[in-house]
Image 1 (cartoon, one colour):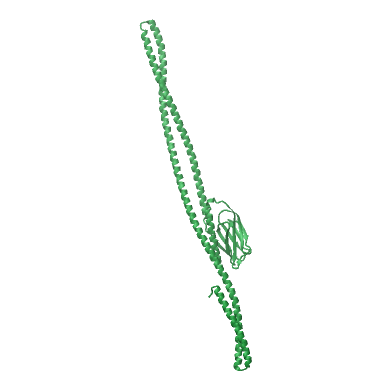
Image 2 (cartoon, rainbow, N blue to C red):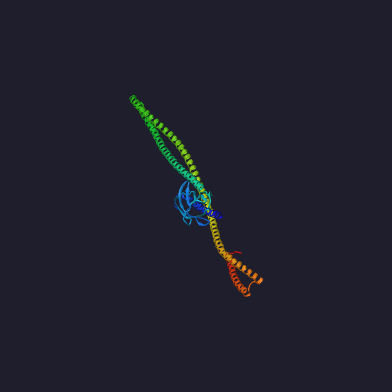
Length: 414
């Protein structure tokens, strides 16, 4: 059971490394990864476990599956992977199933599992934030794209309004200039008409003075005066028309200037409004830049922190691997020690049996000697045989004791 927990810990360390990689590659728009390979090794207390069905699924979709070989190894290959958590399942009849939820795949990663006999299943949950990271990143991306689109649309509208206002301003200036030119020309025409009227009046007075004293001349004069009067009336009519036109031109000029001022005010107001909007957009763009830089700094900090965590995880993994190797070496050494010791103990049993036989013979011979029921020479012969047997047993026991001490020393046993 300790071995099971040990390998499960190794698996979780591996998952931490994978999560670090997935988090580091978040900026890649979560593109599908191609050709992911996963190496799985399954064993039990006796070594590699053959015939274990290993499957990799995601939301009930089978990504890859395989069966361990006689060494307990199987390689899973995933054609496409979307960076989201998957479920790794190990099953074999007569053994507890193992389920690993929340696994993040990394190409070339390998995991070792130990399965124990029995029923039921062992479920391990891997806590990752990848789904929340992807969801948040997607939301941020959509919001950012929406802001950019709105900014560009507003900018286009502002440019159109600016063009319209500039055109309106240009049209107003053109109309104002034309009105001013027309008014100046009308003033000149009015002044010319006034000078012409004064000239005509002076010439008429002179002609009247020269014709005084003659009735015929008076009649002609009156006729001529009537013509001249008519001419003056026409000229007056013309002058009054010119004056009216001049006055109208002045009014047009005033109205044009008034309208021009209104247009200028309107254009200025719209231009000020546009300037304010552009300033607001500029401030917003500046704020977005600062926010982006802040996010970049935060991302850099997170990446640095994650790298530190990855190094710690690598260190922990190496320590765990070292601990595992030491435990396996110790186990092998203990097995060798026990095997060698059992052989020596069997030899000791044989020596003990030989010693027991010698003790019985010695006891029997002693009783015969004590009772005087044996010839002396025969007794000496039997005693010599017992002595030789005892010497052999003693040598074997010394050799055995020496081998036992040597074995204990080799494996640091007391």
